[in-house]
Picture 1 (cartoon, helix red, strand yellow):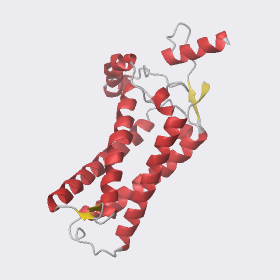
Picture 2 (picture 1 turned 90 degrees about the vertical axis):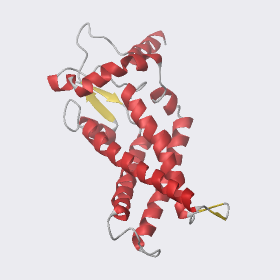
Picture 3 (picture 1 turned 135 degrees about the vertical axis):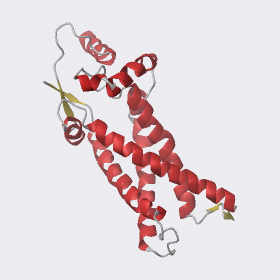
Picture 4 (picture 1 turned 120 degrees about the vertical axis):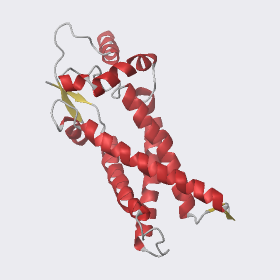
Length: 225
Protein backbone atom coordinates (compact mmCIF):
# COMPACT_ATOMS: atom_id res chain seq x y z
CA UNK A 1 0.00 0.00 0.00
CA UNK A 2 1.14 3.54 -0.73
CA UNK A 3 0.06 6.75 0.99
CA UNK A 4 -1.20 9.55 -1.26
CA UNK A 5 -1.71 13.09 0.09
CA UNK A 6 -5.00 14.28 -1.37
CA UNK A 7 -6.65 16.68 1.06
CA UNK A 8 -4.88 19.83 2.36
CA UNK A 9 -5.69 20.91 5.91
CA UNK A 10 -7.82 23.98 4.98
CA UNK A 11 -10.05 21.83 2.78
CA UNK A 12 -10.39 19.16 5.45
CA UNK A 13 -11.50 21.70 8.03
CA UNK A 14 -13.87 23.29 5.53
CA UNK A 15 -15.31 19.90 4.52
CA UNK A 16 -16.31 18.85 8.03
CA UNK A 17 -17.61 22.27 9.06
CA UNK A 18 -19.61 22.50 5.84
CA UNK A 19 -20.97 18.99 6.42
CA UNK A 20 -22.21 19.97 9.89
CA UNK A 21 -23.82 23.12 8.49
CA UNK A 22 -25.59 21.18 5.73
CA UNK A 23 -26.88 18.52 8.14
CA UNK A 24 -28.15 21.20 10.54
CA UNK A 25 -29.86 23.07 7.68
CA UNK A 26 -31.52 19.86 6.47
CA UNK A 27 -32.60 18.91 10.01
CA UNK A 28 -34.18 22.31 10.67
CA UNK A 29 -35.46 22.88 7.13
CA UNK A 30 -37.37 19.60 6.91
CA UNK A 31 -39.46 20.65 9.91
CA UNK A 32 -40.83 23.60 7.92
CA UNK A 33 -42.39 21.11 5.48
CA UNK A 34 -44.14 19.03 8.15
CA UNK A 35 -47.91 19.35 8.62
CA UNK A 36 -48.79 21.84 11.33
CA UNK A 37 -45.36 23.49 11.35
CA UNK A 38 -45.49 25.38 8.04
CA UNK A 39 -47.05 28.42 9.73
CA UNK A 40 -44.38 28.92 12.38
CA UNK A 41 -44.63 32.23 14.17
CA UNK A 42 -41.94 34.72 13.21
CA UNK A 43 -40.12 34.65 16.55
CA UNK A 44 -39.83 30.85 16.72
CA UNK A 45 -36.20 30.04 17.60
CA UNK A 46 -36.12 27.34 14.90
CA UNK A 47 -36.39 30.03 12.23
CA UNK A 48 -33.54 31.99 13.77
CA UNK A 49 -31.31 28.90 13.96
CA UNK A 50 -32.04 28.07 10.35
CA UNK A 51 -31.26 31.63 9.24
CA UNK A 52 -27.96 31.72 11.15
CA UNK A 53 -26.99 28.34 9.71
CA UNK A 54 -27.83 29.71 6.26
CA UNK A 55 -25.51 32.67 6.84
CA UNK A 56 -22.82 30.21 7.93
CA UNK A 57 -23.39 28.31 4.68
CA UNK A 58 -22.98 31.56 2.76
CA UNK A 59 -19.63 32.22 4.47
CA UNK A 60 -18.58 28.61 3.84
CA UNK A 61 -19.35 28.85 0.14
CA UNK A 62 -17.50 32.17 -0.20
CA UNK A 63 -14.43 30.59 1.45
CA UNK A 64 -14.65 27.63 -0.95
CA UNK A 65 -14.70 29.95 -3.96
CA UNK A 66 -11.82 32.12 -2.71
CA UNK A 67 -9.70 29.10 -1.77
CA UNK A 68 -10.41 27.39 -5.07
CA UNK A 69 -9.36 30.44 -7.07
CA UNK A 70 -6.33 31.32 -4.94
CA UNK A 71 -4.84 27.81 -4.93
CA UNK A 72 -5.91 26.81 -8.46
CA UNK A 73 -7.91 24.04 -6.83
CA UNK A 74 -10.67 24.51 -9.40
CA UNK A 75 -8.27 24.28 -12.34
CA UNK A 76 -6.58 21.10 -11.12
CA UNK A 77 -9.55 19.18 -9.77
CA UNK A 78 -12.74 20.55 -11.35
CA UNK A 79 -11.75 21.36 -14.92
CA UNK A 80 -13.45 19.05 -17.40
CA UNK A 81 -10.92 17.70 -19.86
CA UNK A 82 -11.35 15.72 -23.04
CA UNK A 83 -10.40 12.48 -21.33
CA UNK A 84 -13.19 13.09 -18.77
CA UNK A 85 -15.82 12.97 -21.49
CA UNK A 86 -14.23 9.80 -22.82
CA UNK A 87 -14.20 8.12 -19.39
CA UNK A 88 -17.67 9.05 -18.14
CA UNK A 89 -19.33 5.89 -19.48
CA UNK A 90 -16.52 3.69 -18.16
CA UNK A 91 -16.77 5.29 -14.71
CA UNK A 92 -20.56 4.91 -14.69
CA UNK A 93 -20.25 1.21 -15.62
CA UNK A 94 -17.86 0.74 -12.72
CA UNK A 95 -20.23 2.30 -10.16
CA UNK A 96 -23.32 0.54 -11.51
CA UNK A 97 -21.98 -2.93 -12.32
CA UNK A 98 -18.25 -3.63 -12.21
CA UNK A 99 -17.72 -2.69 -8.56
CA UNK A 100 -20.07 -5.52 -7.54
CA UNK A 101 -17.86 -7.96 -9.43
CA UNK A 102 -14.84 -6.89 -7.42
CA UNK A 103 -13.15 -5.11 -10.34
CA UNK A 104 -10.82 -2.15 -9.77
CA UNK A 105 -11.82 1.47 -10.09
CA UNK A 106 -10.59 2.73 -13.49
CA UNK A 107 -9.75 6.09 -11.91
CA UNK A 108 -6.83 6.55 -9.51
CA UNK A 109 -6.88 9.85 -7.57
CA UNK A 110 -3.65 11.81 -7.30
CA UNK A 111 -2.61 15.19 -5.88
CA UNK A 112 -2.79 16.55 -9.44
CA UNK A 113 -6.32 15.23 -10.14
CA UNK A 114 -8.35 13.71 -7.34
CA UNK A 115 -11.85 13.70 -8.87
CA UNK A 116 -13.07 11.41 -11.62
CA UNK A 117 -15.41 12.63 -14.36
CA UNK A 118 -18.64 11.84 -12.50
CA UNK A 119 -17.35 13.37 -9.27
CA UNK A 120 -16.44 16.56 -11.12
CA UNK A 121 -19.93 16.68 -12.56
CA UNK A 122 -21.66 15.99 -9.22
CA UNK A 123 -19.51 18.18 -6.96
CA UNK A 124 -19.33 20.95 -9.53
CA UNK A 125 -23.11 21.01 -9.90
CA UNK A 126 -23.76 21.02 -6.16
CA UNK A 127 -21.17 23.66 -5.31
CA UNK A 128 -21.42 25.69 -8.51
CA UNK A 129 -25.20 25.69 -9.06
CA UNK A 130 -27.27 24.28 -6.19
CA UNK A 131 -25.41 25.99 -3.36
CA UNK A 132 -25.46 29.50 -4.94
CA UNK A 133 -29.20 29.10 -5.59
CA UNK A 134 -29.78 28.02 -1.99
CA UNK A 135 -27.68 30.91 -0.69
CA UNK A 136 -29.43 33.48 -2.89
CA UNK A 137 -32.97 32.30 -2.14
CA UNK A 138 -32.16 31.95 1.56
CA UNK A 139 -30.78 35.49 1.74
CA UNK A 140 -33.96 36.82 0.12
CA UNK A 141 -36.02 35.09 2.80
CA UNK A 142 -33.70 36.43 5.49
CA UNK A 143 -34.20 39.96 4.17
CA UNK A 144 -37.96 39.57 4.58
CA UNK A 145 -38.90 39.07 0.91
CA UNK A 146 -37.33 42.39 -0.08
CA UNK A 147 -34.65 43.30 -2.63
CA UNK A 148 -33.38 46.86 -2.57
CA UNK A 149 -36.15 47.80 -0.13
CA UNK A 150 -38.88 46.74 -2.59
CA UNK A 151 -41.42 44.12 -1.52
CA UNK A 152 -41.44 41.15 -3.89
CA UNK A 153 -44.67 40.08 -5.66
CA UNK A 154 -46.39 36.98 -4.24
CA UNK A 155 -45.71 34.93 -7.40
CA UNK A 156 -42.01 35.72 -7.11
CA UNK A 157 -41.98 34.62 -3.49
CA UNK A 158 -43.60 31.29 -4.48
CA UNK A 159 -40.95 30.76 -7.17
CA UNK A 160 -38.16 31.51 -4.70
CA UNK A 161 -39.73 29.10 -2.21
CA UNK A 162 -39.95 26.37 -4.87
CA UNK A 163 -36.29 26.83 -5.82
CA UNK A 164 -35.23 26.71 -2.18
CA UNK A 165 -37.22 23.54 -1.52
CA UNK A 166 -35.89 21.90 -4.71
CA UNK A 167 -32.36 22.73 -3.55
CA UNK A 168 -33.18 21.16 -0.19
CA UNK A 169 -34.13 17.85 -1.83
CA UNK A 170 -31.05 17.92 -4.06
CA UNK A 171 -28.84 18.51 -1.02
CA UNK A 172 -30.48 15.63 0.84
CA UNK A 173 -30.03 13.31 -2.16
CA UNK A 174 -26.42 14.38 -2.63
CA UNK A 175 -25.64 13.82 1.05
CA UNK A 176 -26.98 10.25 0.95
CA UNK A 177 -25.10 9.42 -2.25
CA UNK A 178 -21.94 11.12 -0.96
CA UNK A 179 -21.92 9.07 2.25
CA UNK A 180 -22.49 5.87 0.27
CA UNK A 181 -19.73 6.69 -2.21
CA UNK A 182 -17.36 7.44 0.66
CA UNK A 183 -17.57 3.76 1.64
CA UNK A 184 -16.52 2.56 -1.84
CA UNK A 185 -12.84 2.24 -1.04
CA UNK A 186 -10.29 -0.51 -0.28
CA UNK A 187 -11.68 -0.48 3.27
CA UNK A 188 -14.94 0.93 4.59
CA UNK A 189 -13.28 4.01 6.10
CA UNK A 190 -10.39 4.69 3.70
CA UNK A 191 -11.95 7.80 2.18
CA UNK A 192 -13.36 9.02 5.50
CA UNK A 193 -10.02 8.61 7.23
CA UNK A 194 -8.33 10.37 4.32
CA UNK A 195 -10.58 13.39 4.80
CA UNK A 196 -9.45 13.49 8.44
CA UNK A 197 -5.69 12.96 8.13
CA UNK A 198 -5.20 14.11 4.52
CA UNK A 199 -3.61 10.87 3.29
CA UNK A 200 -5.31 7.91 1.64
CA UNK A 201 -3.84 4.45 1.24
CA UNK A 202 -4.02 2.92 -2.22
CA UNK A 203 -2.73 -0.43 -3.52
CA UNK A 204 0.60 -0.35 -5.33
CA UNK A 205 0.28 -0.58 -9.10
CA UNK A 206 1.08 -4.01 -10.45
CA UNK A 207 3.84 -4.35 -13.05
CA UNK A 208 2.57 -3.29 -16.44
CA UNK A 209 -0.51 -1.58 -15.00
CA UNK A 210 -1.45 1.64 -16.73
CA UNK A 211 -0.41 4.78 -14.88
CA UNK A 212 -3.06 7.52 -14.68
CA UNK A 213 -2.37 10.39 -17.05
CA UNK A 214 -2.16 13.02 -14.32
CA UNK A 215 0.22 10.91 -12.25
CA UNK A 216 2.36 10.14 -15.29
CA UNK A 217 2.65 13.84 -16.11
CA UNK A 218 3.70 14.57 -12.52
CA UNK A 219 6.33 11.82 -12.55
CA UNK A 220 7.71 13.12 -15.84
CA UNK A 221 8.05 16.62 -14.40
CA UNK A 222 9.85 15.29 -11.33
CA UNK A 223 12.22 13.30 -13.52
CA UNK A 224 13.14 16.33 -15.58
CA UNK A 225 13.82 18.51 -12.54
